[in-house]
Image (cartoon, rainbow, N blue to C red; front, side, top):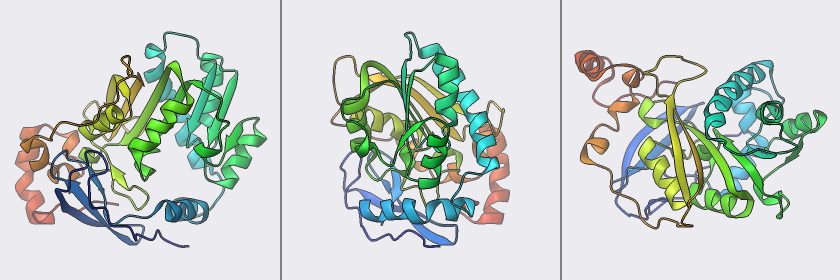
Length: 312
């Protein structure tokens, strides 16, 4: 089992281009120490140093599933989680889908559960998936689903009414360019794109395979820079938690910007946003009201010190 090599030092924020980078936190996940930096301008949090494109590709081919699942083949636990997630995602997507959805691309499709759910729910007739794992692509093909190893391998002339990226964007080395290319090459003119990522301000985002950790603000920035107009944002913890104050995930539904406009700059993060960034890493903060959090704050400082520890 091989961990990811982190040989590339980032000198400018991948979103806004600022060179005002600062060390944010060093944590350990799956036995490997990971250094995260934050942008002093827009607030984006990302691994620095990180891996190159070639190193990430090798990691996903050879090590990712083994490190996370202790095996390379699909598991019953994965299937159960994906079935539960697919139900939640359809609840989010359905109200925003005002036209027939006849084609669907799921990037990071894993076992193809969401592809199958959309076939049943929307009557999708053309379902395609992308997943780097050979065993998962084989599983999809055994269930009648077309699946490619990467977005670059997709037929260039195919466009989709719906594109989904569920827990994918945090794994991508250049999320703005990745989204921009995906939208320009594969999203239908009036199609929808659904994205879900872990919420770093819920303290659940820092992992060996997550070069980026998004907040609501930085995910909105990324979408705008990729030429997307967000229709709806959901902060939630489902299916793992039904609590209305659990905001461990950020989900957005977006479409191409109606004006065809791609943002070339983003707004600076507020002082309060940057000042509370590390506090948000404490497990439980987003499940509590601010008065309750402040009552518990002295106890947490005594237990963890002034720098919160990321729990894995």
